[in-house]
Amino acid sequence: MVLSISAGVVILFVAMLVISAFRVLREYERGVVFMLGRFWKVKGPGLILVIPAVQQMVRVDLRTVVMDVPPQDVISRDNVSVKVNAVVYFRVVDPQLAIIQVANFLEATSQLSQTTLRSVLGKHELDEMLAGREQLNLDIQKVLDAQTDGWGIKVSNVEIKHVDLNESMVRAIARQAEAERERRAKVIHAEGELQASVKLLEAAQMLAKEPTAMQLRYMQTLTQIAGDKSSTIVFPLPIDLLSAVRATFAGGAAVGSPVGSGVGSGVGSPLPPAGGPGSA
Image 1 (tube, rainbow, N blue to C red):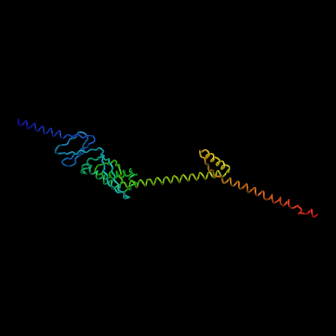
Image 2 (image 1 turned 90 degrees about the horizontal axis):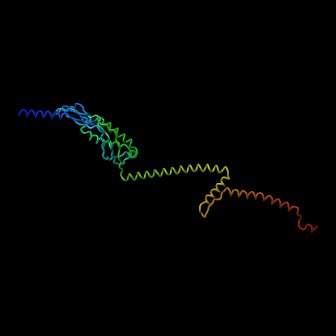
Image 3 (image 1 turned 120 degrees about the vertical axis):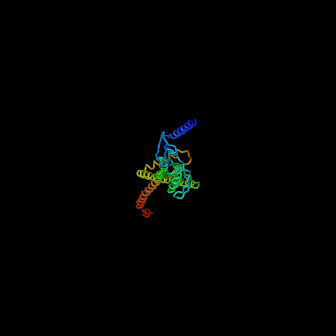
């Protein structure tokens, strides 16, 4: 009776050992198996056998991990203090290295991401952080990928989420943007004046070829002014019209002066002296 109970206990114990030796790994999991403390092989996915008390297995998830990098105080190359946070996407590509080469690859990657973010952004100016984020993301991703390659980790992407500026720097950037808009407005106005002057020069050259065109232009301007509901009309007198009037008067004076001199001399010469007939 005692022997049967002992045999039953032994059989139950062996059955429990056999059952515990079987492990099931999902498609995205791998098992790093150690034999008496030494690395043996990487198993999975599916049903695997791990000998109890002789072999130990560590599960490794191969899915992409999304890690949020907390805000970091960064001093840019132009001595501007900003707070920058980012997000890092990485996954384990070699479970053996991820378990053997580093104690906790998640914590190690997080700390390395923070230091790399500060060091890379510190080499660039503030304008590059605000406008050239794509290039900065690529630079950080390359540095992280090169450093984590020995841990069996692949950094696929790094994205800078937010660049936090203090109030004084925000106001300075706003003033800079306003000055830039004013500069563009002045340049556009100057270009418009230049184009208008060129067109006015061409119009003046066309009008100078035919003086009558200028008179028609004056009449058209007067018509446009008269169309407005205004009781007062200010119309400039053309200088060409005054020149024509002066030329007319000058021509009349030049014609009248020789006629008067010729008549006076011709009439007065044949008259006899006063008292001539009486004396005769």
